[in-house]
Length: 385
Ligand SMILES: *Cc1c(COP(=O)(O)O)cnc(C)c1O
Image 1 (cartoon, rainbow, N blue to C red):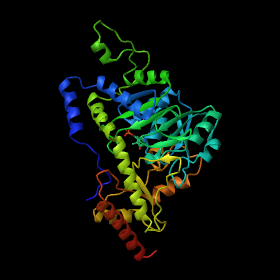
Image 2: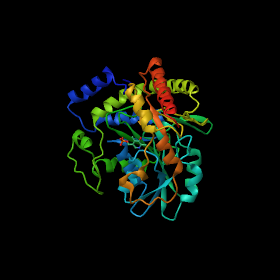
Image 3: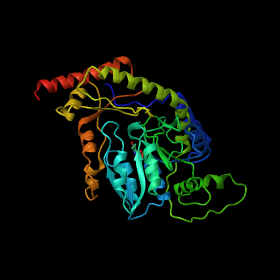
Image 4: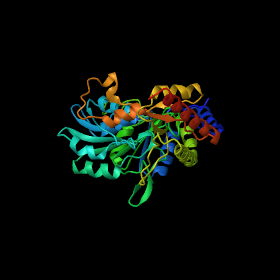
């Protein structure tokens, strides 16, 4: 059986977690601070604030950006639903624009027409690790006085060309970037998230809101030699990461360059193998971006039955996943007005599948995936289209 992914977790992660357990301090403390410092160093952001997951990171980013009920946030439907949910958690309305059919990211040509007097921000997504076109998005946002929040959930280790050189996603190209460390992503802490920004005041606000709006954190009070009373200026949340998770995260960060290198090699190999199946469209990486290949998304021919192909591959021991979801097609978004047509989002959802891609994959496994795909398509072709 070839699964869709396997996280790379070894003895060093287990030992790091065990050391925190034995230290007696398990919740947010020094190890979270260390993980933040290392993450900010790696992506080149002045501030990094760790939280419980990327969904809470998106919520804090939008709240700190001042998103309030009645506001509109331009984003994509074609993404994991957490992005749209975070907008609604602020009482605001996600305004969905369509995606580019080749790169599965926000079509930047559609943004300006989606700006209304209520628009406050653009929530752009680096979908499955492929950077979206920030060099276009940020100037459009500035022209209209909008905040830019990056959903970088899948994009740890991805890079974008900026000022003539490649820089990691999370470098402050926009206002704030939000990362996920869910096991489905490139590095994991079980559950976990991170906000990176160059705005010191925003970082302070993230830190305050992630622990109930407290003026002085539990750990700081614990360490203080004098008695400290905390105050609560705002109603906040419990969005903290634990030191156990952060310890695992520190080990994962050490692996990140090698994990991304391996993923790029595998993605390149898939591209070469798919050249022999002309009816399948491989993913496109623009010259200004370097994906971390969190997922490898291929487009099936229109005549192919997506579910049938996936089932035939599964019967042969190869797991796949359906193309990225569309929030506007889900019951949870039935009442959300769809202001613009989203044909490319819907087509990508219906005709794309994700192939297994994980660092432990061997050449033989990749060949098996491609053989299963080819077999499934031949089977459908014979069945008559
Ligand atoms: C995974 C993902 C999220 C949610 O991340 P969690 O850490 O699970 O909350 C948000 N947006 C996108 C695009 C994702 O892929």
